[in-house]
Image (cartoon, helix red, strand yellow):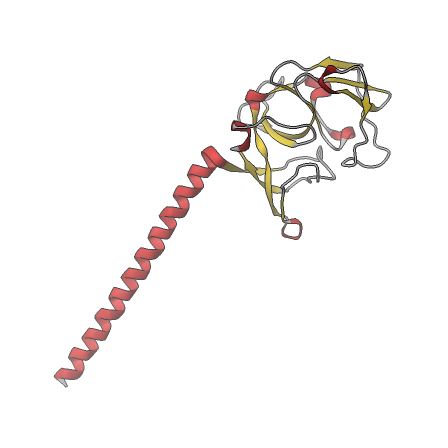
Length: 203
């Protein structure tokens, strides 16, 4: 009987040690995950929830994205990439709010909008290019209250929403300075039936 009790105590102790080890492993894993989350959220990537319809059909209201905050520390935004930026420079905007739009013009470009079309003079060249924008709906025009004709200075980017009829963008409040650009979409995590990794923002 004493031997059975001793074996029972040993088994009980072993189970207790196993439980403690497993619990400690879980705690360590949570600590590591939390550390990764806060480090990446602050410096490498951060979550972003699309609000509104300004980027349809590319992104929809309620899309949950992970934004790459690292790339633009080493390179500049390229034409037609989608970017996320602070809105504090926009009248009525704040540092805690963000917009998502597509880069149409980069520093040195001349951007002209007239008769519902976007005309780009790359690097302010003499030859114009009327953009054939596959990312917007067929027949959708790019309208503005006043004629747009702007030459972008250093670090300035002309951005437009893909849903031109429902977007507050550079047509209304001018170019975005690079200092306000946070990053570009890396992954769409939600909705689940539209999960996607974005290797090229033109897609």
